[in-house]
Length: 478
Picture 1: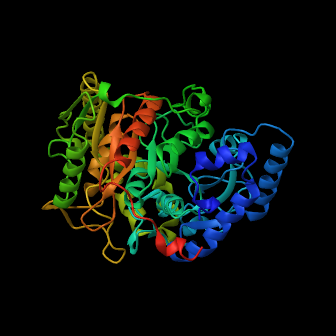
Picture 2: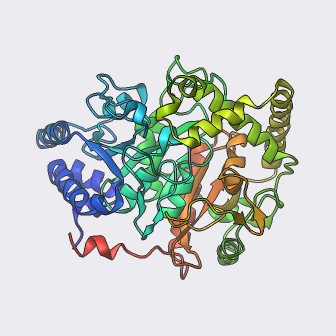
């Protein structure tokens, strides 16, 4: 039996629009799944059930009366607990804001509501989104639906776990150095990092940077594409924002993979540390995809010094965002936030100038590289989801990790590129945990990337051994 909460978002939306599925029944099914699964996973941190039920009832009335719902009409979704939601507790995963209940929505949340989405829940995140494991002093850790002793990833780990477990058909997340792609890979779902500026956010603290973007978390690529209809939007308060017609994303177009010139790289020519077993899993996927594309060859942009460039710019980013907080509230902030800010304070002007110049060179290298290809495919993560009691791996592929950033270079390098990136499931790793790949598209080629990723997702579904197992521990109790 298929429960409404187990339907993909696009399936649920089509049934709602046709009158064959009540938005109220879908919401009740999601609430039942949350009641069953969230005690184990700790993915959902707050809910507004009353408002959600009223909006579901209103959507149902509209369908009965023959009124057309918005592109996300009737679908319950979650918002990462870094974004301001009216009447819904918003903590940023920090004791500093543990009791905050805003009275307004930020622009992104308002756009989702305007598209018909029912904002049901907030999803867990590390404090201020800093970390590749979702845990904080307010709510504790979010667990991986495929192994409750392991991390769901971060920093959008609450969204990834909730979507994977059927608590929500889709959820919002954000991505600075892989915070959508990391948990998507470890939880067996899809996370999409759009081209910077496509999804406006008026609360941006650094006016012109590729770093932090907002995007969808979903069970498949077509659902992620659907959610983009509520996320995309221009806002003059965001200096990175550019105009884009949201309904461009309404329908997935067919892409013939055999016409594409695709490159693949395991570790960006040695610049990104990679666990041997993960590299082997990736090579297995590459082997299975042989013959899928018009051309499929190993290649990588030249990225000399990328680790130092990234580390310096990241330190500046954290100093700009959290320097005042650390100065005024260090007693209630996590050691991780404080350490990131102190690393920023240790940087000199020459360090920053050198990193900015290096970033420009790396950006130019990516643009030149994409003149000859349509897509680039790389692993979704450098390691398997680690145990919650182990923390960040100390070594990856024989290389010592100074911090969790070193273990994330296969994702964070792509942040510097400014290109859209999507993480999709691609079977299991050597531990039997979800494994995924990142697909990189041309800058501002977001819709093309989503369409191509949907076609590749369909192809992967036909290949032996590349499907995620079901979450029987949840389904058997529903």
